[in-house]
Structure formats: structure tokens, C-alpha cells
Length: 310
Image (cartoon, rainbow, N blue to C red):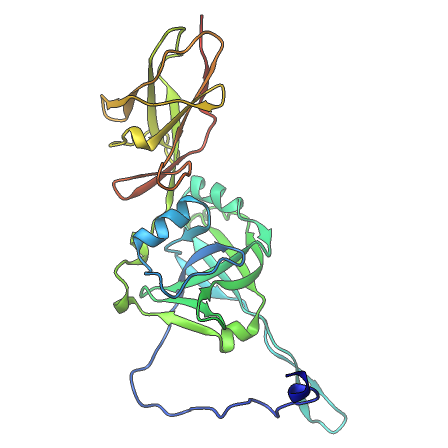
């Protein structure tokens, strides 16, 4: 009740500190991976931290994994103190954590990182080189990511002859010191059934029409390649990995045949002249424009439309 807590103040911590050292140590290594979460997203304690749970969240954009940075730098601010006339110091401002991760992954990856520049848009799960993950423990027993302020993909650094390779750094400042000092848990790698490298991540694709569809056509022929190099073909897609819209209305796909590899003939109802046909990646289960095929996620990065010829 309010009457029980009004003007009540504990001196220091409200509990004693358990400083014994029995049992196995719970340790965390060098931060190497991040998972950006939509701000405020809650991870239920009853869920399993595995591919089946994570993949739909990645498909919907709720999670964005950033895996395997090549270097880490802790640029956190220090605690600040005030000193009175008698020389007695007192904690004035607690420093905030700020992490810089370096990636050497090529320009398609760098362009995608740049889309994440923001302020207070994301929370983050943090993974170390051994596959352990840190996450925030909430008062209701569930979990969330560490609250972030600025997310800044910094300027891409060019290769220096005889020196560092080309790379891009990703800088995040975290805002809630209490999360870091007390309100966190660690998921240890030995208790998980996936490694960071098995984390679902989205690969960009480019879908192109091999020929402009003509009036009365029922077959659309498209090629699908990875956006990162624009040459590696994407194999093994099926009808549920595509969505076809005609004048912005989804139509039924009868069949999808792959021949040769990376080239797909998609059969739909007949189209008519001047209609606009669009082909995109899709996943019916997730209701998202990200296809899940053979354990890999794909999303097309360009407008894949064609105007039906007469």
C-alpha cells in the first residue's frame, strides 16, 4: 500500500550480496553476434530458443540477426564521480555500455546494415564467440533485448594496402544500466540446439522475368539469383515460395517447375494486355514476403513487375 512505502528508503541494496564462489562459474565471452529486436518485443520464457521459434520472427522483421563480426571494441563510457571540498568522492553518473562490432562481409551486407541506422528503434540480444546469449530478465519472468539508444552503421572503411581489409563497424549504445548490472540472464551454448551460424538470416534475391508475358499467357518464366553477387542461382524453390499479383491482387499459382536450375516456370490464370504482373518471394505459413526453403530464408530486393504486352 502507498502508506507502507511513502518516505521509505533503503540504504544501499535492499538485499545482502551473495558473494560465495561454490558451483560452476557462469561466464560470458567476447561479444560477436547481435540480434536486433523490435523495440519492446517480449520473448516468452516458455519458448524454445531454436530455429523453429526464431525463423518466423526473422521472416516478419521482428528479429534481425547480425552474426559473426570479425572484431569487437568496448567503447562504453566510464562512471563519473563528484568530489566535495573535503575530497570525498561520490558516484555522480553511471556510465552507459556502448559496443562496436566490425564486419567484413561485402557491399550487399554493408548496404543492408545502413538501413538499420536509428534511435531507440531496437532492443538487442548479445551473443559471444562461444555461442552464449545474454538477454534481459523482466519482472514478469519473460525476456527482452537490452534497451538501445542510437544504432549507427559507421562509414565503411576502405582497404589499406598492407593493412586492414575493407570493413564496416556497427555501433550501439545501451541505455538501461540496471539491465547490465543486475537484470539479465545468460543462455549457455551447451543448453541450446543451434549455433549462431545456424541462426536464420535473410538472403536477398533478385527475380527477373526471362520474357515479358503476353496477353493470354498462363506461364511466367523468371530467374532467381542472390542479390549479393547477382549470379548465384537460387535452387529448390516451390510454389509456396512465390506470390504472384496481377494488378496488385494475388492470384492462384497452379504449378511451379524449375528447369534449368534457378529458372522457374510459374503457371497462373491467363493474363490480359496492360495488366501489371508482380512476382515476389513469399511464405504462406508466416504470411510474409520472405520464403523459407530448405532451411534458408530469401527475400527479393527489387521491384519484380512486368506489364503484359498485347
